[in-house]
Length: 73
Image 1 (cartoon, rainbow, N blue to C red):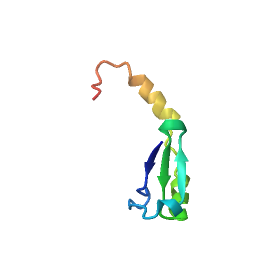
Image 2: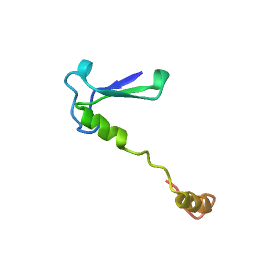
Image 3: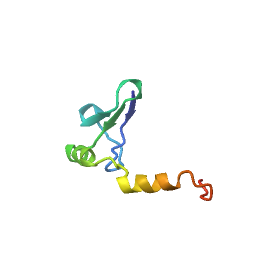
Image 4: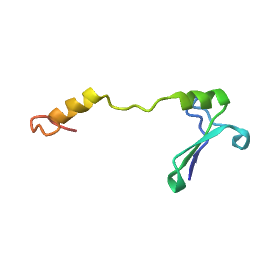
């Protein structure tokens, strides 16, 4: 498991991780334990919705993915 004591919402180091709120992302050895300065910061983090490509952007990508004239970095 990986652990971070830098609150991703405030960018500050959590001073007392033993008593700080946290979330677990993932499972097993690749899990990430994220500590927060406050419950409010934790709630704000949990409210962030993962970005999902819109159906139209996927359709657009598929139209161009095999185009040899487009230079991909």
